[in-house]
Amino acid sequence: MDKVLVVEDDQDIANLIQLHLSELSLQVDHCISGELALKQFEQQEYALILLDVMLPGISGLDVCKQIRLTKPEQTIIMLTSRNTELD
Image 1 (spheres, rainbow, N blue to C red):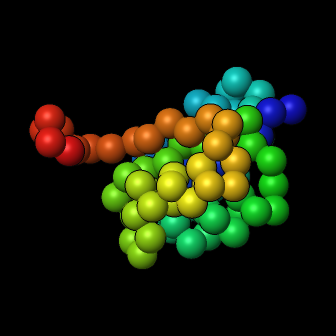
Image 2 (cartoon, helix red, strand yellow):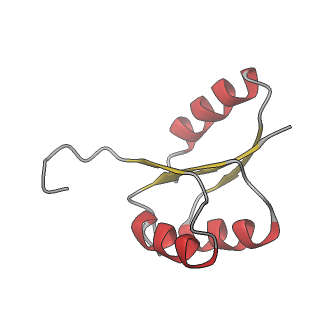
């Protein structure tokens, strides 16, 4: 079974994502901060990481950069509520 790491600090959004991924028979781990996500990433292999951009502590962009240093081929989808071109 493929594993997905959801990194999202809004519990309602995380629950909705987890529900839909579980319906696809995916195993889902959830973290609420960048620090926890990096620890989880070190301990597990993931087919996909769904990563919120705006997290408490380490930002999603910084988490992405750190993951790319150790595993550049890791599939990551960034989640954001930002809506301007500069973002």
